[in-house]
Image (cartoon, rainbow, N blue to C red; front, side, top):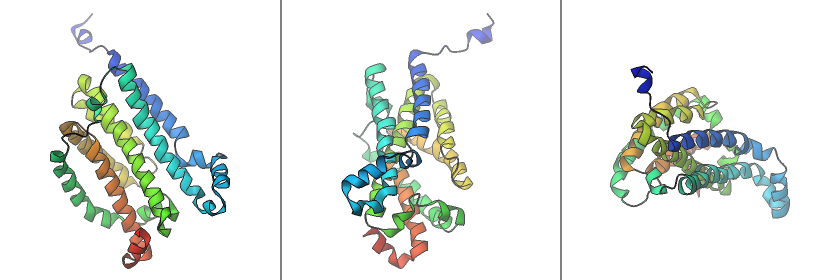
Length: 252
């Protein structure tokens, strides 16, 4: 055996479990966790029939709420179960960490502050106005807005727990900081179908959020930042549609 071949690291059990489970979860999520799949089943009509005629206006919203719940199941609960029962490790070592996070808040607030003027600019671009909010009826306000965004927030919790938690911290012992780049690739790919500037910006976001997660040992603030950016963009797009003077009527 050559020296170069001998130097190639052998896959360890932990890394194999992370690679295989993460790939399977990505496939399952893509086929059976998105709003389009749920809305194509009989489940929304059954739920509406049980809740009553007034619930019919929220039929499409149910798809986005399902998306949020599915994200928690497939990207938080299943990885947490694998960490505890298969890897026999602690979830807190995979970014599931709340204690000691307040001192880590500052860079995330700076990032949000830097993003606000960018979000205002892109909210005026037709491609973004056509895409956001993902749930068109969010512009109607009330439960159409908050019933969507609360579950949209759960979707982001699942996203950060999976990419900046399970995948990143799961591979870090083997790959070191290269785990950030490995995590970033599938993270960018889930943005396919969104406006091109957003997909390219996901490359930067993947690296920045990955680095900050490693530094703080948690995905907590990454979740809040990601959700905050999405909420701000939706508010700005809706504001341009109905007029910023009327945005309070949508939110409250």
